[in-house]
Amino acid sequence: MQKENVAKFLLACLLMFVSISSQAFTAKEPQEGEDAKVNTKEEIKAYIDHHLQDSYYVNFFSDAETGAHYGFPLPVILWDDGLKIFSSGKFHHGENVVEVDGQHYRLYHSHIYKTDAEGTIHYNENGFPSNERPWDFSITKNVLTMILVALFMLILFRQLAKTYKNRPIPKKFGRVLEPLVLYVRDEIAKPNIGKNYRKYTSFLLTVFFFIWILNLLGMTPLGVNVTGNIAVTFALALVTFIIVQFSGNKDYWKHIFWMPGVPVPMKIILAPIEVLGMFTKPFALMIRLFANMTAGHVVVMTLLGLIVVFQNWIAGPSFFGFTIFISIIELLVAFLQAYIFTLLSALYIGMAVEEHDDHHPADNEDIPVI
Amino acid sequence: MEEALNLDLIGAGLIIIGAGIGLGKIGGAAMEGIARQPEAAGKIQTAMIIIAALLEGVAFAALFAV
Image (cartoon, rainbow over all chains, first blue to last red; front, side):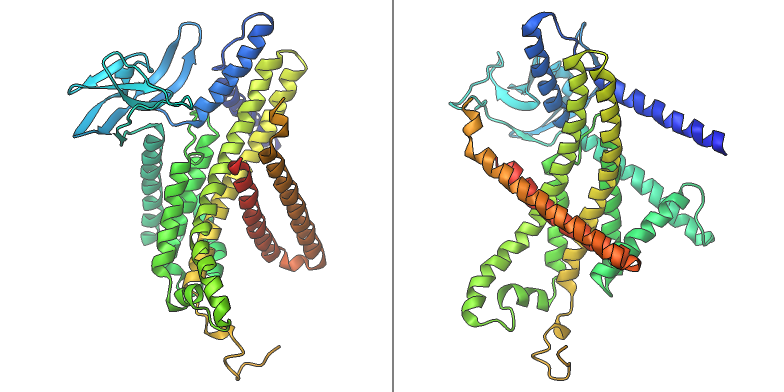
């Protein structure tokens, strides 16, 4: 038993080492001299920025010396007076201008711009490209990851659901999932939503597992940063917003626009604040998940970058240790953020469906004032 | 070093100090509550996490406003 645990621990350490080192080695080796040090910092910054962004390629690793990238291109789907579909491999990582039906497109700093045949980028006074950008519906790395995670979850939970038809306890991996599902139902949905919790449990479960799996994928050497993308968190928060507004009962709207038990002048002042509150809640959900995941990725990558900056025998191992420490904390944060997103969604839904009748003892003389 | 006098950054720093104090108070109060009533630990923890998350939202909003 003891030996087994030690072996498991060593295996976990090895996996962590492999995942961390494969991220670190992609940073370029610096040149000699003082100038090279500045370049290294710039390079690390660019590397971190690149990691945080979405990409039109799935890039497993790059060879800095030969400039070769190992990965595969993804389809680019543009809407620009008609649908235009081509492979992102045609861009050759931003080196080539792609021509489709007489229109020219160029990949510049991970964004697609419309250009002329030479691929000229015009800049405005702030130094940002002012070229027109087509509507972009491309299957990017983040979109691909989300599709795969959605399929993975569909298969996983369909199987779990199927096993309940024949036997009361699940088999195999379902035994890991069942306590989590029950946890979301009994600890998040039931106490916060109230008697109609069954209607919303499916949404909460989906959101919980979707965010959690994506957060965990962010910690793997695949280098995906889906939940650290504000567009993704915006969409997730938007779903919560829509569900809250559509499940809001009479009391919910009454408490926003004409709250009982408040003097009329105060009602007029409070109503706009309450309406604003409708939007700040999902906004906070969006910012919280995005900022937490982005911050986590930046911290891990910066610590790895420091190894490359210092390059000596004291800093290397100590920052390596720090990176492992932060990575373990990030595993906790990955769960915590999924939990918090689900919990707050449940709370907001609970606020919208709550029956408010018994909350105003002054209106009802039967209830004694404690 | 003109950037050192950037008032935005000082404001963000102040907000983060405030958020830090707030988080400390939440954590301290939760610890006290759990010590007094260990059987209520679960409920106290949930409430603590909710408030900590709301406070964190404010701190992040400050960071992103910079």
